[in-house]
Length: 222
Image 1: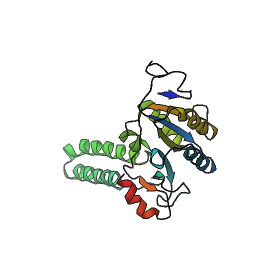
Image 2: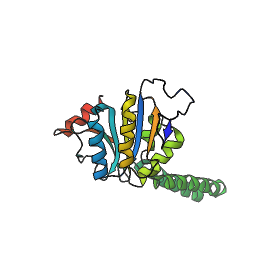
Image 3: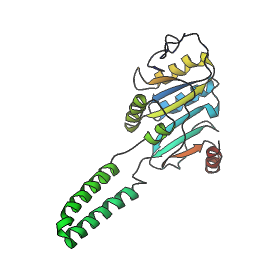
Image 4: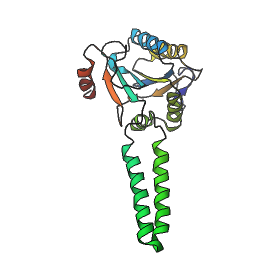
């Protein structure tokens, strides 16, 4: 795996740089908005197919269509607190049960109440921590250290692009596109093998096009 360097210069496992590999994934961290749309368009113009280019982005409304090339897959992470009802509900239940034991059986109720308060505090703290793209990156078995950096940038409003190719000659131009629209000199990562995101948790997958609502069902079956 390479980070912020040209994969043709060296490889992470010490293999011969000229060795042919089955497939590569170039992961880019790019700015949202015009930079994202420009990067997607230019990568597609290189010949990367619609099923080999995926974007992970965050939106307040996960069902709002994006202006991507028709047929392209992208994953939207909701920019809200949905899905937190369960941990918050358990936290409230722990507080109520703890208070009940403290009143009904004071000898054991007070220690129990303190334990329940601790559990409730952990759940409440977790409910206010955004997980961002972590469930998706964990599901796809992304490199742990790099995944943390990707999620940090994602939470700062950046967008993750995954471009997969079997053609080594495309790696450099894809990297240059991501650099041109990225946030730093280390705004791209090159992974040996196919690293394909899937919509997990509260994320929603879309296939861009005029009939995008129906395309969501088609995308989930790919």
